[in-house]
Length: 369
Image (cartoon, rainbow, N blue to C red; front, side, top):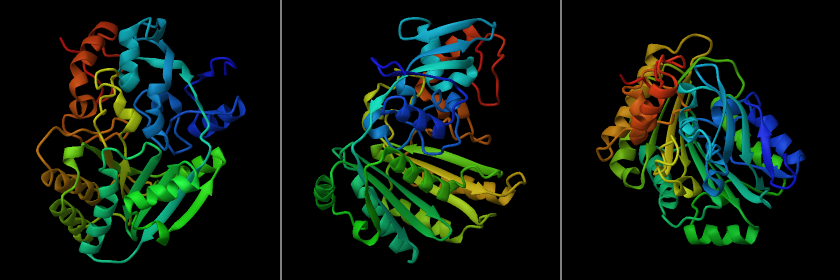
């Protein structure tokens, strides 16, 4: 950590749990990143990196100032806004198609002073009850002027719905926010004011572990889709969603559907400023089915595929966008879903720096003849 600029130098093998500890103890600093402590920064910093502070600080990759990259021809280059700019642009969203990052330099942030965090569990009710609960939550996140100090997540699982929220500010500011937005669940949940940064992050990680299973070695299938303001759920769409979830064969008891509020600082960045293109998303949906140590069963995969089909069928027509960090091997036209309008430029850069397609996977950026 540079004591004057607060720029941190980080190796790609560092995981998020170690990252938050080391930034804290190297100068009381932090940065935006995801909630799962086992995730490594090598992929996280180069594919997006969404988490608790994204609405205030942007994505993890928005913090990257410079990177050392090994290219397909075995050369090692430094990429930044002032040198090897095309490579720098490409690795901020699609690095696995272009090279191996061996070092990052990132800007860091002052620690937040504290936050009010709450968890509300809804375990009973029919389809219409669940629709009303989701509508109440969505009515808050749909506000275009909602403060960036607020982060929230709604998780649907086998036994009910869990809503979590974090408001960064004083308890008095949270009370005002609660009244302005008529939070329908705050007084029915567990609420705590937390001032310790590691405790704040641990709370988010705990919610993630409850949802996903964290470090457990399992086989799972996952899908994702983004929502713009115009694509948020209608009542008809929510009825279709919860009717399907109540009646469809799952193939697994361990499944989750997670909705995250996004936007804020993440969307301040133009869509073409980095390879990461999802700058108009205000909500993400991620779904998972865990099937133990065996490959995902057909029924579990069909359950999630059909779930996303139900969602897409009940919103306005438009391009399907998926988060490149949630790899979906069965996603049709994955490259367009991951990178959208930035794909053409990515293909041009790929043809220049990796014409033999050394850095290849089934959904990587392709070399265009």
